[in-house]
Length: 75
Image (cartoon, rainbow, N blue to C red; front, top):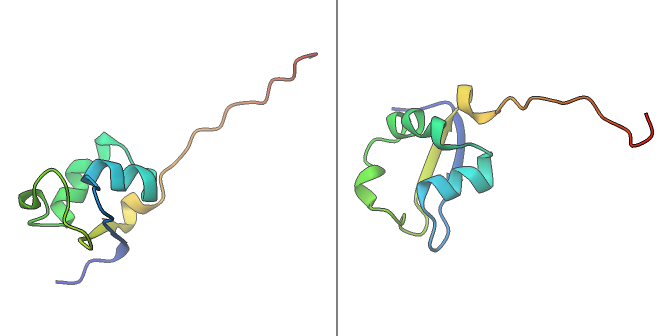
């Protein structure tokens, strides 16, 4: 089963949430969608084996960031 999206490879000592935060900019709210797209990754344990491929679905790959207006000191 091919899933469209971006794939990331686990490094030594990576947890799933740390990998997603560092490489994809995703947070805890995104974990259910990631676990659904990667069956069996939860059984790998809290620390992912080195080289584990984690696929981030296309809908999750580009997080939307809110922008705030710039406030100047002397405005």
